[in-house]
Image (cartoon, rainbow over all chains, first blue to last red; front, side, top):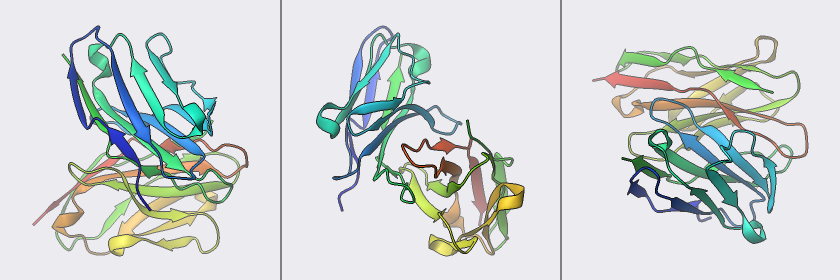
Length: 115
Length: 115
């Protein structure tokens, strides 16, 4: 099966600019995750969707980050305005989302550098 | 909320040495457990997973992990490491409680294997 697709792979922006990342999960996967991985740290969950509904966005900085998953398939994550501390790899992952079948598959990630 | 602890943040081994990376989690119910690996410049990949059954799980590339429920542990082992095992290893836990499942990652362990 095709993997999780993310774009762009790399992005460099100046602080206070806006940026958007795109994710296409594996077909049929109900659960979609966005993670932020800062250099030297483990992935931190930003937001989790079940189909097109948000089930956990407790760690999403909502004053500047937003995410949507229209029609329960593709998803976009936006940062507006960006800060220097947003420099990180943004990972998208998807899973079937059933009890006993919770393996998450990850995309290549988008490396964001804010200067 | 669940949490995951990885106690060894940076491990350096010579080739052919044995490896054991610690992972402890906190959650009172049934869990699914994972080890992910991230090779330099690549995306997170699943190394092995535990859902139920035999607590000794074998994964790819000669890795195995043992789930010890009484110790809330899921340590990763490999009897003889190779230079190509140089990577960052992440332990992750998902409660298997129905509904949506939130993945929590540990901080990661960087393994450096010296030829």
